[in-house]
Length: 329
Image 1 (cartoon, rainbow, N blue to C red):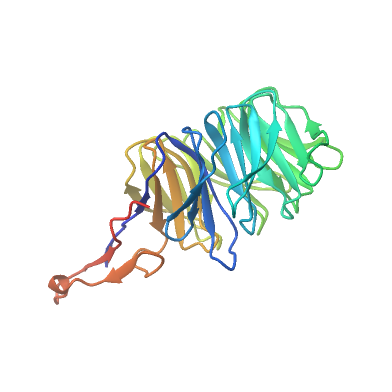
Image 2: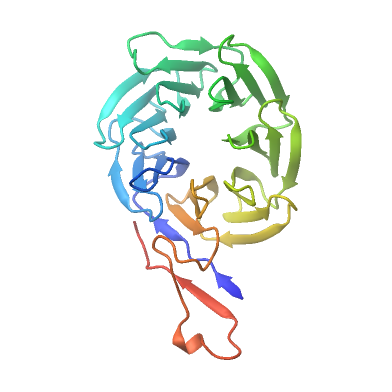
């Protein structure tokens, strides 16, 4: 049966959407935060894209945004030389952490007690959120701006990607480099999958998978266009990628076969992530919108209702239409 993918469009931002992240699954469902150059990160219900609130306080473009596991805290990284921690339930600002340059990346530990930041001053910083007045731990080593920094290995290690064309694995205790990877070009994105300790890296047209503990290469796939972001399905069946040609590509993880490609955005795709239940993936674009896409097209889930229009139900009909209301969440 031919299936038609109908993404949900989430409007509200006025500039390019450059980062997004999902929370874990909570008793209230799961949530989605987006970072945008308009300086106004937004929180949404993850399965529907419905707008919940906007975090107001940054005075420049927001480059990174994240939620803790239970969606009670948010953190943002911005061009105003600060990272901010927010109460994700009330929307109130909890902390402003001053930096020496643009901040690009923020990540909580699993217990939400520490925040890892990275940015244009080439330094990794670890803040103890229970002692906000204390100086952060600083880890130096990168020679260019840090794009992304992530906790890994049960928060005992740190992965960082920078414009110096390296990805480095650090020991949190000794704050020393344990291992590193070098690339011909700048790394455009990085995703860490704790289940199986997989590190997903994109650079140029390449989507590469590594063992996160020893940085051994597992496999690479080359896409038709320059890729800015990719995400692996929680069950590791598929991965999706998006980039310069406005398209989202879906691949089989085991065979590396391209399964589908969809065009919905009107500008390059900057970020893409699977939801924690794997039922959808979200993409953020230069066009200022977020779009939610079904992993299994045609399934009734969230705002998607799978119907067979009566006029299509005939003996030779081979098309199922999966409809969603024209959502401008």
